[in-house]
Image (cartoon, rainbow, N blue to C red; front, side, top):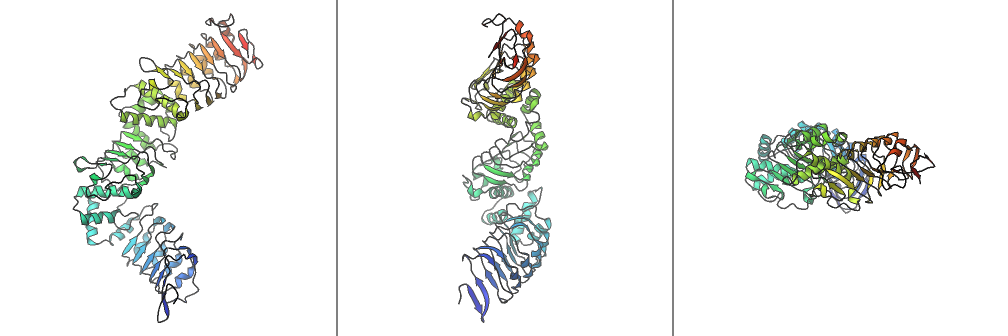
Length: 586
C-alpha cells in the first residue's frame, strides 16, 4: 500500500519514485528485493548508488535519469538480466567503462546529456542492444570505428539507405557519424527530413552539414535562426546564400553562436565566405580544413581557445581574422601563419615585415598588438577594397600607428578621433603627413596615453616631430628611436619612463630640441649626445641622471633665443650631473 510500491503475490516487483525529491545515496540491504523488476528513480537528487544494487538479480528496467550521479557504478555490471538502463541527464564524466559489456541482455541504453569523454569498443559485446543514445555529450572524443560499425547495424532499412547515401558523397577526414546515437541528433533529423521532403543529393548533404553546425553551436539559442531546420530549402535559412543552389556564404556574425563550430566532412565544398565574428565560439573543429574553396574566414570577436592547424589546408584562404579573441595565447600554428603569408593577395604581411622587421616575432602571436594591427588592416582592406591605396607607405605607417593604438589602450585616450575608422590615417587625431602620405608629425600632448612605446615606432622613417609629453608612458625609451634620422623635435617629458637614455639618440644629428625631464630616468648621460651638433634645447632635469654633459654641445650656435652666449639651452640637475659651461641648474 505504500506510495510507488507495486506487488504481485505479495512480492515487490515495481518501485516507482520518480520526481519525488529522493536524495543522497540509494542503499539496499542484501537481496531482500529479489523479485524487483522495475526500479524508477528518475528526476530526483540522487548522488550515489550503493553497491548492493547488484543483488537485484531480476531487475529488468532501471531508470536513474535526471539525477546528480557523477559516475557509472561498476556494480551495475553484475545485473546481467537488465534490459533497459537510463542514466541520461546526470553529471557523469569520463569514459563509458568496459564493465557495461557484461550486461549481455541490455536492449536499451540512454546516456544523453552527460559529460562523457569517450566510449570503449567493448560495447560491441552487447549483441541484444537495439537502442543506444548518447546525444549531448559535448566533449565526446573519437568514437572507435568498430563502435560506429556496430551502431550501423542498429539502423532500420530506410535509415541505412540514407546513411549509405551520405557516406557516398560526404568525405569525412576523421570518422563517419552517419548513424544514430552519436553525441548530436543530426542523423535522426536528416532521416526525418527525408521522410517529409524529397531532397536531391546536394540538398541532402548541405542540410546535413549545416544542421551539424546548428546543433554543435547551440543553434536553439541563436539570436536569429529564421527558417533553420524548418523550411525545405536550406538556401532560405538565415545567413545562408546560395547561387545555383550551392551554399557559398554563411553569414552568422553577432548571432549568439557559441560552443563548437563543427562541420561533417566536405559537404560544403563550395563555401567561399564564412563569417562567425562577434559571437561566443570556443572551439573550431578540425574538419574546417575540408572547406577547400573557402577564401574568407572571420572568427574575430569570439572566445576561441585554440586554432586548429588544419586551417593550413585551406589553400585558397585569402582573409583570416582572429583578433579580439582574448583566450588565445601563444603563436599561431606554423601551418596557419605560412598560409596567411602565402595567400596574402595584397602582400600586406610581406610589405610590413620587410619594412618593420622588428615585428617578425610578434605579428603571428595571438593577442599581441602587432597581431591585432595586422588583422585590422586585412579586415579594413576587405571592407574598403576600392578605396585603399595599395602601397607600402599605407601598410607600414598605418600598421605602426595601429600597433601603438593597441599597445597603449587607444580606446582610453582623451582624443582618438578617426582612429581605426575608414578615414585615411593622415587625418587621425595627432597625426600629420606629407604629400606622399608619410607620417611626419605625431603630437599626443596630454592625451592619457598609457603602456609602453612600441619598437615599431622606430620605422616611421619620415617622422620629424615626436610629442608624447604629459602622458603616462612607462618602460624604457626604445633604442629604435635612433632610426628616425629625420627627427628634429622630441618631447617625451612628464611620463613614467624608466631606465637610461638610449645612446642611439646620438644618431639623430638633425635634432634641435630634446626634452626628457620626467623624474624617472637614471644612469649616465650618453656621450653620444655630443654628436647632436644642431641641438638648441636639451632638458634633462628632474631625473636621476649622473655623469657629464658632452662638452661638444657647448659649441653649438643655433639657439637665437637662449639666455646665454653658447647657442644652446641645457637644463640639468646640478646636484647629480657635473656642471658644464653652458648648463643651467634646475
